[in-house]
Image 1: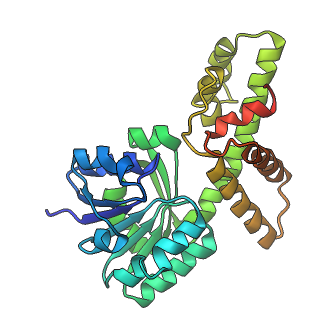
Image 2: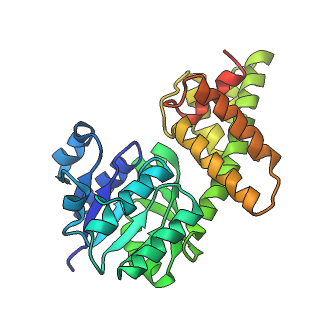
Length: 289
């Protein structure tokens, strides 16, 4: 059976790994990203390069986007050089960017007006999940479309869950980021305590990651913190964006989440100190310099 032709817009830390999985699964993949030099390993692997979004999506059956900020999503979808201006009826749009639920609904409504279909499908699992093809994918849109896309999403995802109508995937991702925010504070405070109390943090992790306190923040990022490896699996600048979106949604829902507010404040401080390009585990620097 012939596989769908795919266009993939945005090949950053996680997007590049997703493209590798798709190419290795014998999908015809055309890519576009802002810096062609960063895409060279994917081109060498077999992905096709396009100089513009319009060129990338021209032959595509499915268009994936995995970019940085909601403003980038706005541009990629709604600008004159974007997807809606250059795509055509029957194309399927899958936005894997963590963005606002409201923007996901707008994309779905615009897509429907052009006889396209869309799914908001943000992911969790960081660079490790992307590399291993074990991402958690949270999907919002038509259930029929989710069922159709499931085999493709399974190429790079492990836990792929239909959350509800358009925007529901983004709401689920906000739940994920709220949880991660609390876990990162807990992981960094535990490691700071271990270091100050004279424990060997590696030995401490053996016990704590085997019990009820374990989390991705502790088991995956904890060893990086100990090694002072702050390279990004997920950028601080993107996490601040996510936490801001979550807080905007809590205001709309008349919900008070002080833990979320604390995490946003701590990460905003890191951003202001120049750590925006580092991974979220750099939060340890709030506790130990």
